[in-house]
Length: 261
Image (cartoon, rainbow, N blue to C red):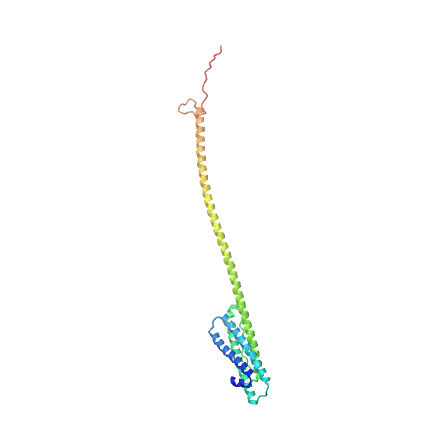
């Protein structure tokens, strides 16, 4: 088919080859998508496939424009071949659009529990059968499905961005709480060290007070003993059993050397 299209016009043949390459890339991309389990990676894969679909839609429009601008008139058979080719391209693109729409809805359904909102239902369009639709209807239907798919992808991207923001805020909050806990631990260590030093200081003060009390008690006993000895000496001055306290003995008697007449 590509060679017959190229025989009609080189430009049409080149466009047909580019569209065929995109269809192969879409087929491989959806096969790869089915093997991906992570929803974020699935969203990225769908976004990449959406870009290929947009390019394919642009090429189909360019193919239709080139058909209308052919320099020489074409016979009815050639015109039929070109119309059938364009219709086949549109059908195949619409099938990929519907498949992508379904996958995008599945991703939305997986995120219901995370965001607490109802998933948007995927409703199949009850349109005309592709075999009974005109080329313009097929193009319009394909454009509508592409727009709906783009909107679904934008919603998926928004969900992904919200998920990333929530994760970032959670990580920041955890980091702040970790730093706060670290400061609390450091303060507790400082308080424990201060209490330990205070306990040692109290023990030292207690030992000094005990020593001072012993000294005061000993001095008190000495003073009481001295006072007792003084009292006894005053009461019994002739008692020879009690020794005189140095400095407290009675004055010695003096003899007068001169006796008055």
